[in-house]
Amino acid sequence: MNTPARLLPANHAWKIEESLDLYQVEAWGKGYFSINDAGHVVIRPSMDAAREIDLYDVVQGLKARDLHTPVVIRFSDILAHRLRHLAEAFATAIAENDYKNRYAAVFPIKVNQQRLVVEEVYRYGKEFGFGLEVGSKPELLAVMSLTEDAPDRIVVCNGFKDDSYIEAVILATKLGRTIIPVVENFEEIHLILKHAERYGVRPKISACSSAKSSTSTPCSRIATCSTACSSSIAIRAASSRISAG
Image 1 (cartoon, helix red, strand yellow):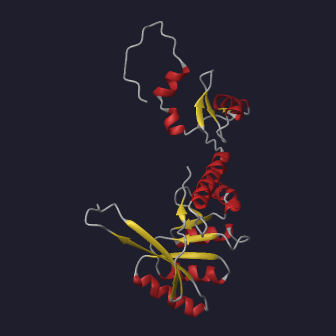
Image 2 (cartoon, one colour; image 1 turned 90 degrees about the horizontal axis):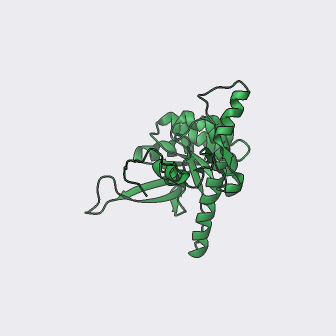
Image 3 (cartoon, rainbow, N blue to C red; image 1 turned 180 degrees about the horizontal axis):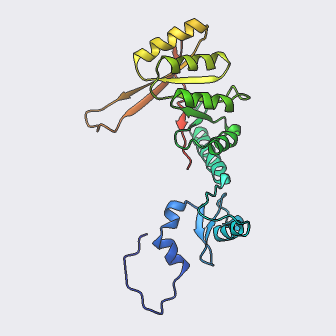
């Protein structure tokens, strides 16, 4: 709730609740950030107030080690908690609706291409079978090194796909990786079939289409996704995206 601007008396004792409201911490913090009784910003990686980290104390500790601001402080446990929350939410929905397939999220590495972040998301998502999404050949090559020991983890290939990109997709599939290119036009299908025949690969393909109603805006659409092996098409659960800062 936003507090209207108001003049405060000179002897007004500022309260923690007023800081929380002024900076809308509860709105953007989502339970991971708050302000303690000392007026310091605290981080709760698992949303547990009993295990909060005082950010001011962290900065003081860095200064004691002769490290000075600006610095980047990453709390990877927040990523782990968000991934678990996402998996549990879909598991609950699947059970409630007696859904017969499974849910698999993919993290688009274009959201944050820092190696440490991608590796953490990939590591924490292992128990849920979560994968990664790439949008170019260089991103695919980078992900190949991460998935070397986990060929079953999904890698979704999006973005503009030229001949070189699609050839890399097919070669990665031939190496045993679970690669799913998202087909956006017929030219990409022709390229996939060309390289699949050349390297003797039976690829998985995700084809997405948009259906617009008469009342839809240019930005609104109903998307349907399916995967295809050669000419046969089997409807499967669409991989959804996650993002982490």
